[in-house]
Image 1: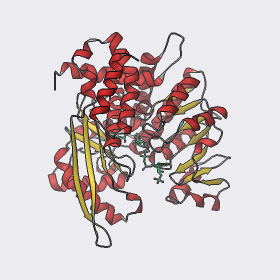
Image 2: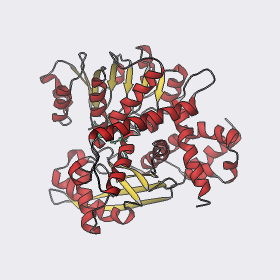
Image 3: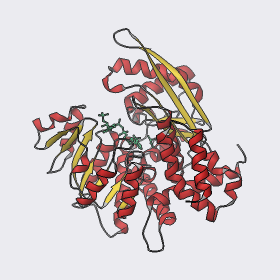
Length: 443
Ligand code: NDP
Ligand code: 2IT
């Protein structure tokens, strides 16, 4: 790597101490974008375009106080990282999880910059959330927390300013409570959040969009190799929104889904999941160990899905959930494709091992962009006061995923015809944002 790369990485590391996830995400993009800038866009060096893109436009951190069911006062920390508004209003999810901190949210907001650019829609980038764990809370505790969180957040967001959505720990229920409180404070029914219910401004297909989009992307990658999903064995991690709809779409495209997991363990079903089985998994809440009470299969406490032989691995849970050792195991068992439903689920060393093996690899910023893409379509529907049919939204989603795939091929194909989807996504996402930032001057 060049001197500029080395000095840039040092510069970002010094400015962002104790933020390992953020530095990991920046390095992964810089490895592709800096060589591109040095050879094809030298003018971006003097105007410090890449240095600017790694500095959030604004970061808000705030106290969230609420009272739990036992009448105890609880204090959490809320955040919104408004990363980049070159292409449109800040856009990206809210994560409620005890693992939330500034490093995690900045990496997510940084990834969102390139992802949102790749969708082709007018979306800036942001991410937010709180170190609040919704998993062990009652419904009324969740409502009180959401109301307190929005009492501060409302002054920083708006339909043309910043439009949050869901992420880990934030689904339709939380979006409902957040929206209700925003509307109450602002006296304004507007598209300030996406992922709303279909009867109150939400878009059809938004719940399905990330998982469905992931499979549309995988379908396109396989198509490039004159292959299909029919008969492929698919290992999926996670048991949440992305994992569930990824599994359903994979099954409907003829694949056999053999694993579902959460942070406690993995269910392995050799015969493959069906919709009935997946709905049963959902009904178990987080008690995956009870799967075998109703269906044949195995529960592996404390284990990840990557030990089971599969053709395609779809990490759909969280960051850094798949490491170098997992890649070795997957490769040994014949895995030919890894596509990320989650954001940055592969560690840096895992990515290097995948690249070396030259199997198909789709980074999250391309492969999971379907969620934010349909959020963008929800914003369009809110602006014109209409609701499109599920078929229409699904058709648009499919087309967007195909276009993202083609952008990756355009920027990522080498002279031997090998497609580096990571490089394609990084450069393809960067070019559009950089052009807009350059045009908008030193801001
Ligand atoms: P959910 O909250 O619906 O589900 C998260 C799932 O991941 C849960 O089953 C959870 O298990 C599991 N999980 C979390 N942490 C771990 C861990 N350390 N090890 C194993 N499993 C874990 O979130 P989503 O499905 O919405 O999000 C999943 C991923 O997809 C995230 O990386 C998110 O950023 C990304 N994403 C989401 C989009 C969306 O539209 N929702 C869009 C694009 C990306 P447990 O209950 O045990 O915690
Ligand atoms: O990571 C993501 O792209 C999301 N959580 C979805 C963001 C959105 O605004 O729909």
